[in-house]
Image (tube, rainbow, N blue to C red; front, side, top):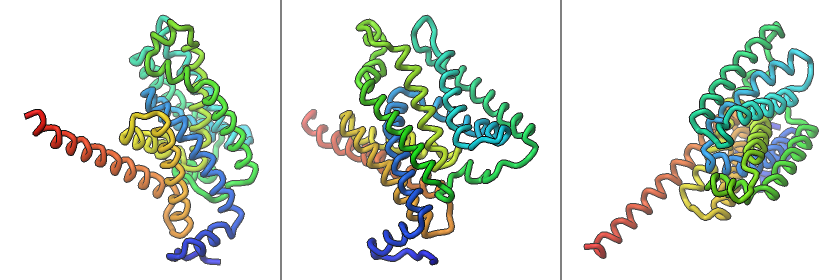
Length: 295
């Protein structure tokens, strides 16, 4: 069967779910979108996007190490993302406080070390990583039921963490000194959040590819935070935006010859620009309306 996009949503949906691999892709994409959006919302708020970028690059040494020892690439993804997160957490504190300057230096060092290890493992492997393009730019092909179950289990664990620790994590994000003074375990939350970020990055990289993880981790959260400062609404919009990006991206990729990563990145960028322009327009209208009253 050769799929053809039509104007009938029912027909198009039936074409999408004809093949088991596409059903797996839709399930995995939905799971990853929910996890990435929640983690990404906190990541943007905590100004740790550089850490997220570095952890996404840990998928490269993770994949090459997994190929070297003969285990699944997914295990390599998650292992190195978590190790990278722990390394960043260990070196990002000064006198018990988060130091943004030192954190940036540590993140850059971890990134360089990860890339170096990736090339070392690849050289020792002596071959070419299978599906290298998929590793870099993502693909909806070849997603297995086992991967879907693994992603679901990790997502449940990550979401449970935020249900339990979300409020104190938000408190420490907004005012770390006050949170620490009131007994909030700021240091433990910092480490735990980076581990959750590492797991989210490892999961997202399997769908969007290593180079395009930010499309789901950053763009939905950044777009939502342009529209509203209300926490529940902002978080809800972030999840909806991420789901829309992955669903539309998967649909367009299925019915065309272009890669999933291209559509996901393009839609995410366009969404952010639209939200940014909307905020600018509203602010200008507000200033114009307020000007006569001031005069």
